[in-house]
Amino acid sequence: MNKYLAFGIVAVLLIVGGRWYLNQSNAPSETAQVPTLQENTNTAAQPTQQPAQPAPAPAPKPETANWKTYGDSHFNMRYPVDYRFVFNLCIKDCASQSTEGSSGLYVEVEAEKEGGCYLNLCRVSVKNRQTFNGVTWDYLGLQSYGDVGVSRNFYAYRTVYGGYSYHVLFNKDVSTNEAVMQSFKFGSVQLSTIAFLSPKSGDVLKQGLWHQVKFNRAIGFWPDDMSGKLILVREDGSIVGEVMNDFREATVSIGVENAGTIDNLIKITSGRYKLRLVTNDSSQKLLAESAVFVVQE
Image 1: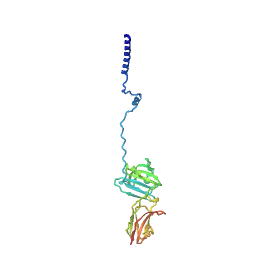
Image 2: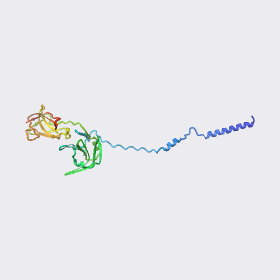
Image 3: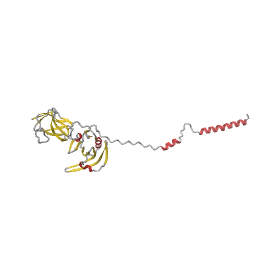
Image 4: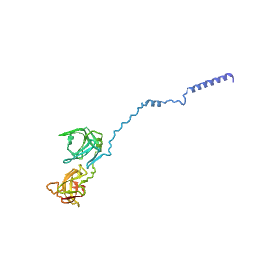
């Protein structure tokens, strides 16, 4: 090989090698992170993250475990032990019961045959309507009632159900009111047990005197909207006669004497007797029976 040919080969190799070295120097490193178009797009679309806002704390629910329960054959409801509870029932005449409370708060329920207008509340416009246990009530808001020597402010609900107009009144606007309304349920409710408190077993009733008959259940709806009837029976169960008719109060008075001119009195001779409380209708369903007591001169 002559020296010119050898020189040419060396020159070509130098040129090729230099180009290869330049290409390698300009190539990106294998470890370099080059964002893709998709990554750039996602980065641009990301909104600025805002700190999460804490959810508002729910309003505390009233503790109802120790509440009292009222129930009769038409409805039941619950109310706080420190509330005064008043129930007015108007079928023929109005009668009422009440319990004492310590908080200065009260709930009053009034029921009367449909068409009645308790405290003129049937003429009051509706603030809003609320549904409790499937029954819609008109909320009337703050109302006032004034009569001779009587002035009242209260928050009122009303509805009509089963042929009766119902009103529920609260003397103050507190959160517990709604919990009371949520407990109000219509329907066939088991009657609470009715029992005689007096006369008791072995009591001696003197002829010629008046004696009180007491029950452990006060005013309320009797079965079939009938009032109770007191029947006097002998110890063997034979009927002497009717002592008291068409009453709904928890305490009544009877006289054990032979004063036949007074409807509430029958002739009672010395002996051993019981009283039966039955429904004041043709079925005379037994509601309660007293223990045996003694009548003597």
